[in-house]
Image (cartoon, rainbow, N blue to C red; front, top):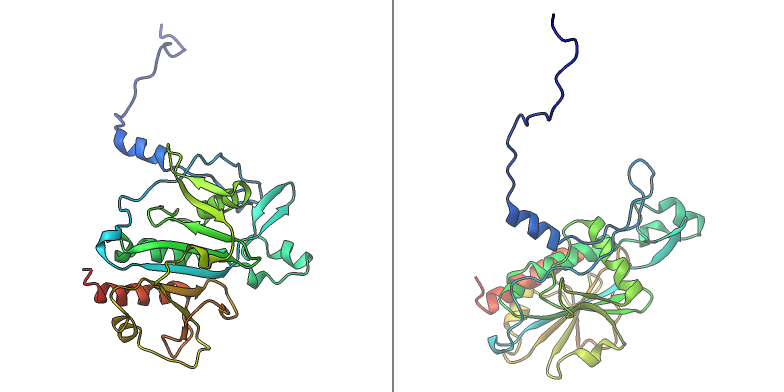
Amino acid sequence: MVRPYAAKGKKRKTRDEKYDRDEEELAEQVEVEEPKGVDENGTQDKQFELEGIPIAPTEPNPKSGPGVIFILEKASLEIGKVGKTEQLLNSDDHASFLKKKGKNPAHYRPDILHQALLMVLDSPINKAGRLRCVYVKTEDGKLIEIKPFVRIPRTFKRFSGVMLQLLQKLSISAVGKREKLMRMVKNPVTEYLPVNSRKVGLSYSSEKLVSIQNYVAAADNNTDLVFVVGAMAHGKVESDYTEDFVSICSYPLSAAYCITMICQALAGKWNIL
């Protein structure tokens, strides 16, 4: 008579799963904080503590010659208490919340800053060690210093988590190290700029239309260049510390594309291939 029940015992694995341990370890090292937010189902995301963010393999090289500094003005980085949690406000996830507060959701665009930082830090200028630093001036006047060898999260969700912790804890350190990659610093930004630097503001509203390639090529080879670019959805940069105020295109451009044009012009001037 056949036994009606299956024999007890451990089930054999039907397939052999192999994993790359090096990739797993790397993924653990670069893991960053998931921002507090609301997912597609309307449920609250869990928040994980952010120990740090990874460092890019290149570092600035002062001996390589003159460098460049970018200042991103009027960036939208504002924390709001949505429900029981604090979140980095953006127009996609918090439109209803912002409207209830009588604010225009179109002005809350931290994604513009995210795209601009990716363009700067991924550029050949940075990999060649010519990017000195990036400064971010928020809409409410806070000043953030970002080192050139920081590796910004690729997705906006993780970027929001990093910015949220930065605004709360005032600094972000490297993974497993005490070195501060991003930190809040005191105003004004001119205190951190090289003495011999040339400060240039960019705006579509400027009456001085220039070719960025020719403009950069004419700059002194022994002078650091500072470019002030707006990181907001609407408006223009109004800084009193710039020596020149130019427009590099007859059409309005995004902050990320302006930075791309500048980096390409600088790569040509410094023969970075």
